Amino acid sequence: MVARLTDGLREESLAALPAWSYEPGRDAITRRFLFTDFTEAFAFMTRVALIAEKADHHPEWSNVWNRVDILLTTHDAGGLSTRDLQLAAAIDALVKA
Amino acid sequence: MVARLTDGLREESLAALPAWSYEPGRDAITRRFLFTDFTEAFAFMTRVALIAEKADHHPEWSNVWNRVDILLTTHDAGGLSTRDLQLAAAIDALVKA
Image (cartoon, rainbow over all chains, first blue to last red; front, side, top):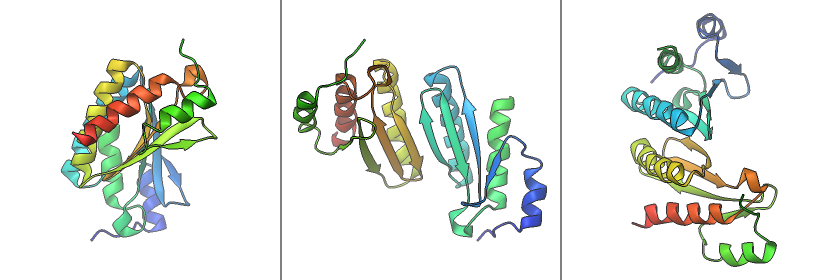
């Protein structure tokens, strides 16, 4: 069972994920990704899906054509946990690569 | 350019898509799909993505683990068109098969 991050640890950790926004209402982080078209967006989603399944930690996400919105939180922990930070970093690595 | 359905034609057409709900505010149709787990949900999404790309008509959709919510409307037509009805029927065929 993974624990929800303390406020101090969360602030420190999110400094390393500047592209993500913190949503206090959900104790979650979100990021919007924009691509050239649907095939680029869905290719990205497929890579994220494989990472998420391997980590057994899944995003809440939506897609409209070239746009993908991802929200990460840990339902079992009742908020943001280290699992979200790890998944966010792995997703960031996909678009940086 | 595809035209928005008239009220009469829309009501008649939606009778053939009983699993879909009409959303007047968006002039759109929506359906929720539930699967065993994330891999089943994402496998379904991948099949829908290929159909959508081939039809050059894409859904607004979201996924949370085993759940996929799909909304169909035609932005170019300012509402529901025959393209949405065709895509809805093709998606229905995936889960019936």
